[in-house]
Length: 125
Image (tube, rainbow, N blue to C red; front, side, top):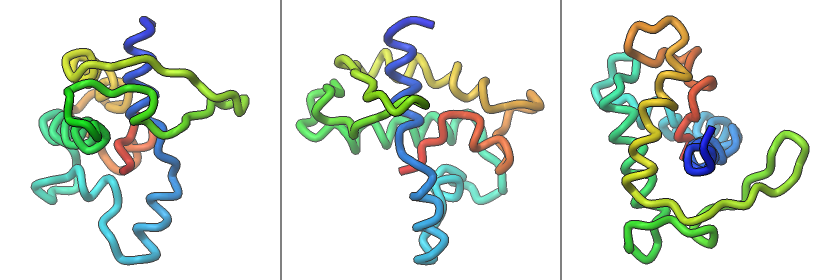
């Protein structure tokens, strides 16, 4: 996997599942519900791509169409080691979305079901 692809996956996966717990405790929509724009209980590729785009621009504090390490929260791998990221363009980021979606679509039906949401980098913000 290329370095840029790894950065994209880190970006998509770095928000901990605590956001799901917080959403449930405060009656806020879960990350799955936020991505499910049409409310049909499943997430299409278009919905996934739209949510990913929203998150990119949400993190791009200075609105320069680049995500730099200082704009991203700290991410630790499974060993607890901080993963260093480089600068990521919107083009690179959006190019990785298809791969991320495919990783989660376990039954290959073209949608992410709630049980597949945790497999794909989940856009938890």
